[in-house]
Image (cartoon, helix red, strand yellow):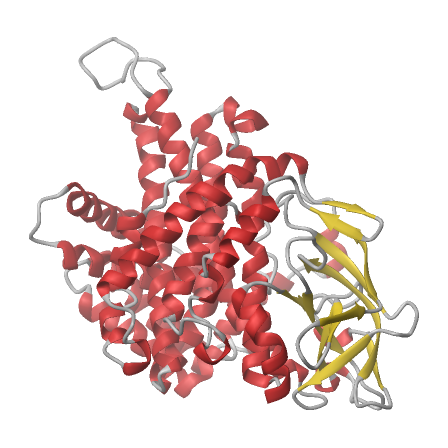
Length: 574
């Protein structure tokens, strides 16, 4: 079936949850007028549906191909990407000094939401470029910014993150790639990186790799990591392309999903001629990496929303078209569409509530990021706390909704011809990359829990409880979350906190998402339209079913680590 952008719900989330009108009152974002916002949301929705969505199935079936060191994509991808660049979609939130439009991050999040719902694998290309832009914008020299950012912002060139090595996954400090000084002030890069998303392809004029490596005499572990910009083609001082750098794609992974996204094994310096430039200072690569990762984790959380939306659209269409059996509680004995059966109706309503709830959380987070960019330090701290919730719960939701979509299709969902299985396969990577969801939860209960001695998190839950005082399920969930914060901060050991981190992260995300759905319903109250009636039901279902379910996780969040270690590793495996 065709993809249609959920424009009305996106505009609502941008207006209510991100607070776009408040952002537009600031001179920096004055261009984000209501007319501009609607034009962007409608325009990118139409573009995604017309250009990216038709390539989704083709990309899954044909995939990326590697031959003679060059990765190519199926027919149509190059033309679609060229149109994306030419229409300026990559530059929406880019710095005006480098050719961007200077609009809020919230609107860039909407661009990626629509592209990813239309074609998740393809949308990873611009998504990775965002991380490269962020790293260079925050840590690059003026010369590096002038040389690389204009064409990264436009999308003419794409960017990557090169972190992972065979022995260094989540433990980035174990990496072995080296950087040796050259006589001209550049560095010679040598090493191998794996899982490099869009590390090689034929759609952009150049690929700008950001590579973590060790310099001579660097301290062991993560303290000795530096960041380097390593272009596929060397760039001359005037911005024109020079010779090919000494780097190559050795292979591309055969994966469960996102087949059209080339996941590359990259080799640097086979001939000792790979040239890189230091970004920032030596041994400060970890700081630059977190700049990239924070942006990436928001955008990966966005992917959960994307795949949920696409799976829900397909499931609701199928459920209205598939005629099967009479409704058990109905008066007629005539077969009806399966959407009329109570359990299918339950699954559809759950899919919708989870999708719209995760979208509300996405745009609330994006709005806080934009406020942080305007100098609101409290909003920035809040955004930092919301990021692990969005990345972890948002991607879990993507998997659950895609799985429910397969279930609604029944046997036709398990075979490939309907496309429901592709959404399920594509969704599964999102809880893994850019920091597994377990790492997100650990971040929440270690680093983020400590913000203002727990005050940032408790202030969020206090607002949820206050605004949802007439919604007992959400108010109670917020109270439970506050109690867990207090227990973790005062009584729990580090092992206890980590043991309860995943259920607590889920509870926190559900509380915030449910709160933001209630805000949407309140903003629409008074009108009698299909959107208003639907939102009221969705918000109520989320509170009564999903928030109530999340409250049941409190026992897991506070159980401690003792039982997890009641068996040693050998006994556990046996």
